[in-house]
Length: 330
Image (tube, rainbow, N blue to C red; front, top):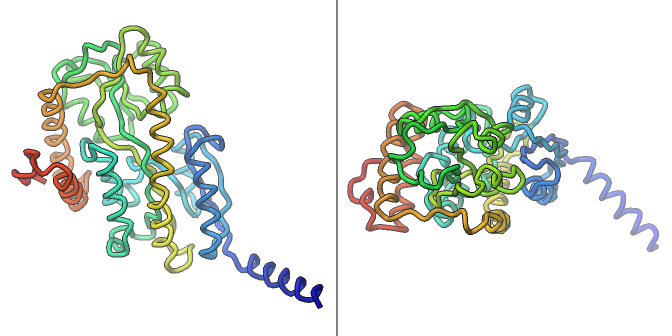
């Protein structure tokens, strides 16, 4: 009798597995299959089984290739940085707006808000759907000369600027610096060998990309959030079961603290001697400059005004005394 019960259980399990939809999930992680983002994707794929989808994970260390494979429909889903997600969903991609997310708590509130069912319609654009957002930490300025710590001192400096990132190009031009077209594969090398004076990157880049070589004895890392890097999962919504996107967004939002542990670890890797603390006067100058550029990008159609308003509301809930909260310019 027990033998027949076991046989029936195994048969039912096999039938359940056979009914799962097979989909390919292409995951960009700068460290490939050994990276923390890819590791979390494995945990995520286990949860996806409960939603009727068996995900085949592919690791990519080149983000552009991952996106190209997605566009060619070799991937049903892709994980990319927010700045690259703009062609698929401008609203969600605007989370990486320069100066838009000053703290981890603002990022947490944003992700929780747009992962709620009430925001579901904003997560869809054409065939695409944003099926989850993960925090990846603040983006900092890395300078070879630690005396370059104000907006004015950036003028004339050579800055490694990601060639696909229109907001960064506009920002570099705005401060009077020189754009040195770069990408994720070569920006750190240019910083380390002195081909550029300044680079921008999250803390995770410091150790694996050996950016301490470029900092050497005179450099530093400005402790100010230029923007907040995030990863976004984009799917072809017609290739997944109904309701998959919402379940996925809620699952991704629940992984915020797991990602924060990696961000904290990476930040702690930066030698304390390199941190450059800004005066409140300089913080205010950076904020005003970034807001000016951010509004300009909104007016040019690069950023989504709805997301900028949401971000401002969340910032003002955290710091209601801030000047922007009275002026309502976004």
